[in-house]
Length: 111
Length: 112
Image 1 (cartoon, each protein chain N blue to C red):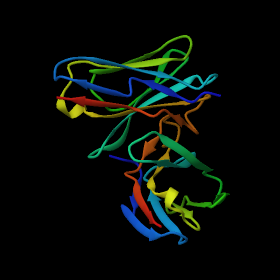
Image 2: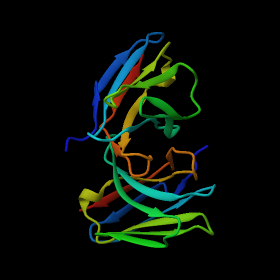
Image 3: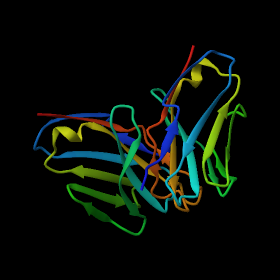
């Protein structure tokens, strides 16, 4: 089964609003990453947060990590229509050497 | 720097046939991972190669195999294709550990 589970599965907001998506995972990790996928194309790496970090920012993205709850959240501020995509969290599952993806959150940003 | 390239981009095969997909990583990257993406199962890890050696393997049947060449280019092969093998196959490269991975555009395989 997938390591990560994401919530919500789908999210629809207006341009300019903030979008928050959550990810939960099951085992210990070294890091957690977020990726974006546009319409069945390749994934684009957004941000990586290590297990000893609690929060990380990159432009309009803010990621938090709570290892005690085995959960992470991705916040996209001031969303744009171009942010419309599927967003996936991925964990390294400790030292497994592979990425384990969640099912993803489909975000629609309406202009 | 050129990104990860995958060929072909689209492929239609018949059940029972075999298929080979190719992936060229970013120059200097030695780790190549393969993933299968389907609507039902999502993104699933197939295997990872580093310096021509399979370093990690997912839970796929032996019909799925791969290899990596000395120039880090990788191929994956699926034999005796089944309808359920229809998927988007994604290749990703990274410099050493599969931390931050750079994905190719994928190969869309349709099995009829």
